Length: 276
Image: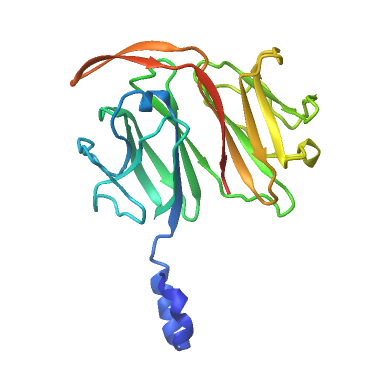
Protein backbone atom coordinates (compact mmCIF):
# COMPACT_ATOMS: atom_id res chain seq x y z
CA UNK A 1 0.00 0.00 0.00
CA UNK A 2 1.46 3.38 -0.90
CA UNK A 3 2.51 5.77 1.92
CA UNK A 4 0.01 8.49 1.02
CA UNK A 5 -2.83 6.22 2.14
CA UNK A 6 -1.68 6.81 5.73
CA UNK A 7 -1.33 10.60 5.67
CA UNK A 8 -4.27 11.28 7.94
CA UNK A 9 -2.21 9.96 10.89
CA UNK A 10 0.56 12.54 10.51
CA UNK A 11 1.09 16.27 10.72
CA UNK A 12 1.04 18.52 7.66
CA UNK A 13 4.86 18.55 7.49
CA UNK A 14 5.04 14.75 7.56
CA UNK A 15 2.29 14.59 4.97
CA UNK A 16 4.23 16.76 2.53
CA UNK A 17 7.42 14.69 2.89
CA UNK A 18 5.49 11.51 2.27
CA UNK A 19 3.96 12.92 -0.89
CA UNK A 20 7.42 13.85 -2.18
CA UNK A 21 8.69 10.35 -1.48
CA UNK A 22 5.66 8.83 -3.13
CA UNK A 23 6.28 10.78 -6.33
CA UNK A 24 9.41 8.66 -6.85
CA UNK A 25 7.40 5.43 -6.95
CA UNK A 26 6.63 4.21 -10.47
CA UNK A 27 2.86 3.71 -10.87
CA UNK A 28 1.74 0.29 -11.98
CA UNK A 29 0.11 -0.86 -15.21
CA UNK A 30 -2.45 -3.63 -15.62
CA UNK A 31 -1.64 -6.39 -18.12
CA UNK A 32 -3.80 -9.15 -19.54
CA UNK A 33 -3.05 -11.92 -22.05
CA UNK A 34 -5.29 -13.74 -24.52
CA UNK A 35 -4.09 -16.57 -26.74
CA UNK A 36 -5.70 -16.75 -30.18
CA UNK A 37 -2.73 -18.47 -31.84
CA UNK A 38 -3.26 -22.03 -33.05
CA UNK A 39 0.51 -22.35 -33.47
CA UNK A 40 1.13 -21.74 -29.77
CA UNK A 41 -1.22 -24.48 -28.63
CA UNK A 42 -0.63 -27.00 -31.44
CA UNK A 43 2.09 -28.90 -29.57
CA UNK A 44 1.66 -30.47 -26.11
CA UNK A 45 3.45 -28.99 -23.12
CA UNK A 46 3.31 -25.76 -21.17
CA UNK A 47 2.83 -22.67 -23.29
CA UNK A 48 4.21 -19.57 -21.66
CA UNK A 49 4.79 -15.84 -21.86
CA UNK A 50 8.00 -14.77 -20.15
CA UNK A 51 8.40 -11.19 -18.96
CA UNK A 52 11.84 -9.60 -18.71
CA UNK A 53 13.58 -12.99 -18.57
CA UNK A 54 16.13 -14.27 -21.07
CA UNK A 55 16.18 -17.95 -20.03
CA UNK A 56 13.18 -19.78 -21.52
CA UNK A 57 14.56 -23.28 -21.03
CA UNK A 58 12.82 -23.87 -17.71
CA UNK A 59 10.41 -26.82 -17.87
CA UNK A 60 8.05 -25.58 -15.16
CA UNK A 61 7.72 -21.80 -15.36
CA UNK A 62 6.22 -20.02 -12.38
CA UNK A 63 3.02 -18.10 -13.01
CA UNK A 64 3.21 -14.70 -11.38
CA UNK A 65 0.12 -13.26 -9.73
CA UNK A 66 1.41 -9.98 -8.30
CA UNK A 67 4.02 -7.34 -8.92
CA UNK A 68 7.32 -8.67 -10.21
CA UNK A 69 10.56 -6.78 -10.66
CA UNK A 70 12.50 -7.53 -13.83
CA UNK A 71 14.88 -10.41 -13.21
CA UNK A 72 13.66 -10.90 -9.63
CA UNK A 73 12.30 -14.39 -10.28
CA UNK A 74 11.23 -16.53 -13.22
CA UNK A 75 7.86 -15.03 -14.14
CA UNK A 76 5.64 -16.48 -16.82
CA UNK A 77 2.03 -16.51 -17.89
CA UNK A 78 1.07 -20.12 -18.52
CA UNK A 79 -1.62 -21.18 -20.96
CA UNK A 80 -2.51 -24.87 -20.94
CA UNK A 81 -5.82 -24.92 -22.81
CA UNK A 82 -6.76 -24.61 -26.48
CA UNK A 83 -6.34 -21.19 -28.02
CA UNK A 84 -9.15 -18.82 -27.24
CA UNK A 85 -10.41 -20.77 -24.23
CA UNK A 86 -7.97 -19.55 -21.61
CA UNK A 87 -6.99 -16.00 -20.79
CA UNK A 88 -5.09 -14.68 -17.82
CA UNK A 89 -6.77 -12.40 -15.31
CA UNK A 90 -5.40 -8.87 -15.19
CA UNK A 91 -2.38 -8.36 -12.95
CA UNK A 92 -0.34 -5.34 -11.98
CA UNK A 93 3.20 -4.79 -13.22
CA UNK A 94 5.57 -1.81 -12.99
CA UNK A 95 5.11 0.66 -15.82
CA UNK A 96 7.91 1.22 -18.31
CA UNK A 97 9.48 -0.85 -21.07
CA UNK A 98 9.17 -4.63 -20.75
CA UNK A 99 10.17 -7.58 -22.89
CA UNK A 100 7.67 -10.40 -23.53
CA UNK A 101 8.74 -13.76 -25.00
CA UNK A 102 6.09 -16.23 -26.20
CA UNK A 103 6.84 -19.96 -26.46
CA UNK A 104 5.02 -23.06 -27.65
CA UNK A 105 4.75 -26.37 -25.80
CA UNK A 106 8.30 -27.34 -26.82
CA UNK A 107 9.84 -24.10 -25.54
CA UNK A 108 10.43 -22.68 -29.01
CA UNK A 109 10.24 -18.89 -29.11
CA UNK A 110 7.43 -17.81 -31.44
CA UNK A 111 7.52 -14.09 -30.61
CA UNK A 112 10.01 -11.81 -28.89
CA UNK A 113 8.51 -8.38 -28.31
CA UNK A 114 9.09 -5.19 -26.35
CA UNK A 115 6.27 -2.89 -25.28
CA UNK A 116 5.92 0.22 -23.13
CA UNK A 117 3.43 -0.15 -20.29
CA UNK A 118 1.97 3.25 -19.47
CA UNK A 119 1.35 4.09 -15.84
CA UNK A 120 -2.24 3.37 -14.90
CA UNK A 121 -2.93 1.84 -18.32
CA UNK A 122 -4.88 -1.35 -18.93
CA UNK A 123 -2.87 -3.34 -21.48
CA UNK A 124 -4.12 -6.43 -23.30
CA UNK A 125 -1.83 -8.61 -25.44
CA UNK A 126 -3.44 -10.87 -28.05
CA UNK A 127 -1.25 -13.61 -29.51
CA UNK A 128 -2.34 -14.68 -33.00
CA UNK A 129 -0.94 -16.74 -35.85
CA UNK A 130 1.55 -15.67 -38.46
CA UNK A 131 -0.29 -16.78 -41.60
CA UNK A 132 2.96 -17.64 -43.41
CA UNK A 133 4.48 -19.70 -40.59
CA UNK A 134 1.79 -21.02 -38.25
CA UNK A 135 4.00 -23.30 -36.16
CA UNK A 136 7.15 -21.20 -36.02
CA UNK A 137 6.04 -17.61 -35.46
CA UNK A 138 3.15 -15.68 -33.96
CA UNK A 139 2.22 -12.04 -33.85
CA UNK A 140 1.25 -9.91 -30.87
CA UNK A 141 -1.49 -7.28 -30.92
CA UNK A 142 -1.19 -4.74 -28.09
CA UNK A 143 -4.29 -2.71 -27.18
CA UNK A 144 -4.54 -0.19 -24.34
CA UNK A 145 -8.10 -0.10 -22.95
CA UNK A 146 -8.18 3.08 -20.87
CA UNK A 147 -11.76 4.21 -21.44
CA UNK A 148 -14.93 2.87 -19.86
CA UNK A 149 -18.46 2.73 -21.23
CA UNK A 150 -20.94 5.28 -19.93
CA UNK A 151 -23.32 4.23 -17.19
CA UNK A 152 -26.17 3.95 -19.71
CA UNK A 153 -24.36 2.26 -22.60
CA UNK A 154 -22.71 -1.02 -23.60
CA UNK A 155 -19.81 -1.20 -26.06
CA UNK A 156 -17.66 -3.72 -27.89
CA UNK A 157 -14.78 -3.86 -30.33
CA UNK A 158 -14.10 -6.48 -33.03
CA UNK A 159 -10.76 -8.23 -33.48
CA UNK A 160 -10.02 -10.29 -36.61
CA UNK A 161 -7.41 -12.91 -35.62
CA UNK A 162 -8.22 -15.77 -38.00
CA UNK A 163 -5.35 -16.26 -40.43
CA UNK A 164 -7.30 -17.79 -43.34
CA UNK A 165 -10.77 -16.25 -43.00
CA UNK A 166 -10.20 -13.37 -45.39
CA UNK A 167 -11.74 -9.92 -44.95
CA UNK A 168 -14.45 -10.12 -42.32
CA UNK A 169 -17.94 -8.62 -42.24
CA UNK A 170 -20.79 -8.94 -39.76
CA UNK A 171 -24.41 -8.11 -39.03
CA UNK A 172 -26.81 -8.33 -36.10
CA UNK A 173 -29.36 -11.13 -36.14
CA UNK A 174 -32.64 -10.40 -34.33
CA UNK A 175 -34.99 -12.82 -32.58
CA UNK A 176 -37.18 -13.11 -35.67
CA UNK A 177 -34.20 -13.85 -37.95
CA UNK A 178 -33.96 -10.34 -39.40
CA UNK A 179 -30.43 -9.33 -40.38
CA UNK A 180 -29.51 -5.77 -39.45
CA UNK A 181 -26.58 -3.96 -41.09
CA UNK A 182 -26.15 -0.63 -39.26
CA UNK A 183 -23.53 1.86 -40.35
CA UNK A 184 -21.82 1.48 -36.96
CA UNK A 185 -20.60 -2.01 -37.85
CA UNK A 186 -17.31 -1.93 -39.78
CA UNK A 187 -16.90 -3.85 -43.03
CA UNK A 188 -14.04 -5.71 -44.68
CA UNK A 189 -11.94 -5.99 -41.53
CA UNK A 190 -8.52 -7.34 -42.42
CA UNK A 191 -6.63 -10.05 -40.56
CA UNK A 192 -4.71 -8.67 -37.59
CA UNK A 193 -6.87 -5.54 -37.36
CA UNK A 194 -9.42 -4.39 -34.82
CA UNK A 195 -12.24 -1.87 -34.73
CA UNK A 196 -12.92 1.14 -32.58
CA UNK A 197 -15.33 0.64 -29.71
CA UNK A 198 -18.90 0.33 -31.01
CA UNK A 199 -21.94 1.33 -29.00
CA UNK A 200 -24.49 -1.49 -28.84
CA UNK A 201 -27.96 -0.33 -29.89
CA UNK A 202 -30.62 -1.43 -27.39
CA UNK A 203 -33.02 -2.02 -30.31
CA UNK A 204 -30.82 -4.95 -31.33
CA UNK A 205 -31.02 -6.69 -27.96
CA UNK A 206 -33.32 -9.72 -27.81
CA UNK A 207 -35.75 -10.81 -25.13
CA UNK A 208 -32.99 -12.81 -23.45
CA UNK A 209 -30.93 -9.65 -22.90
CA UNK A 210 -28.32 -10.54 -25.50
CA UNK A 211 -27.28 -9.16 -28.87
CA UNK A 212 -26.11 -11.58 -31.55
CA UNK A 213 -23.46 -10.88 -34.17
CA UNK A 214 -22.94 -13.17 -37.15
CA UNK A 215 -19.78 -13.07 -39.22
CA UNK A 216 -19.37 -13.69 -42.95
CA UNK A 217 -16.92 -12.98 -45.76
CA UNK A 218 -17.44 -11.14 -49.03
CA UNK A 219 -21.13 -10.73 -49.85
CA UNK A 220 -22.18 -14.24 -48.81
CA UNK A 221 -24.44 -13.38 -45.88
CA UNK A 222 -26.07 -16.82 -46.04
CA UNK A 223 -22.89 -18.62 -44.94
CA UNK A 224 -22.29 -17.84 -41.28
CA UNK A 225 -18.68 -18.34 -40.22
CA UNK A 226 -19.23 -17.65 -36.50
CA UNK A 227 -21.77 -16.18 -34.08
CA UNK A 228 -21.00 -14.00 -31.07
CA UNK A 229 -23.35 -13.59 -28.11
CA UNK A 230 -22.96 -10.21 -26.40
CA UNK A 231 -24.79 -9.77 -23.07
CA UNK A 232 -26.13 -6.23 -22.81
CA UNK A 233 -24.90 -4.70 -19.56
CA UNK A 234 -24.88 -0.97 -18.86
CA UNK A 235 -21.37 0.35 -18.31
CA UNK A 236 -19.66 -2.69 -19.79
CA UNK A 237 -17.21 -3.01 -22.69
CA UNK A 238 -16.37 -6.24 -24.53
CA UNK A 239 -13.83 -7.53 -27.02
CA UNK A 240 -15.22 -9.90 -29.67
CA UNK A 241 -12.28 -12.01 -30.86
CA UNK A 242 -12.77 -13.95 -34.10
CA UNK A 243 -10.12 -16.70 -34.29
CA UNK A 244 -9.48 -20.18 -35.61
CA UNK A 245 -9.05 -21.73 -39.04
CA UNK A 246 -11.44 -22.11 -41.96
CA UNK A 247 -9.50 -25.07 -43.35
CA UNK A 248 -7.97 -28.04 -41.57
CA UNK A 249 -4.20 -28.16 -41.92
CA UNK A 250 -1.57 -30.90 -41.68
CA UNK A 251 1.87 -29.43 -41.10
CA UNK A 252 5.34 -30.75 -40.37
CA UNK A 253 7.13 -29.32 -37.36
CA UNK A 254 10.81 -29.77 -36.60
CA UNK A 255 13.11 -28.54 -33.85
CA UNK A 256 16.03 -29.85 -31.80
CA UNK A 257 13.74 -32.35 -30.06
CA UNK A 258 12.78 -34.00 -33.35
CA UNK A 259 10.12 -33.91 -36.07
CA UNK A 260 6.38 -34.37 -35.67
CA UNK A 261 3.28 -34.06 -37.84
CA UNK A 262 0.75 -31.56 -36.53
CA UNK A 263 -2.96 -31.46 -37.32
CA UNK A 264 -4.73 -28.12 -36.94
CA UNK A 265 -8.50 -28.55 -36.88
CA UNK A 266 -10.89 -26.32 -38.78
CA UNK A 267 -13.32 -24.10 -36.93
CA UNK A 268 -13.98 -20.37 -36.56
CA UNK A 269 -14.98 -19.10 -33.14
CA UNK A 270 -16.09 -15.69 -31.88
CA UNK A 271 -15.01 -15.31 -28.26
CA UNK A 272 -16.58 -12.52 -26.21
CA UNK A 273 -14.46 -11.28 -23.33
CA UNK A 274 -14.96 -8.43 -20.89
CA UNK A 275 -12.67 -5.43 -21.31
CA UNK A 276 -13.99 -3.39 -18.41
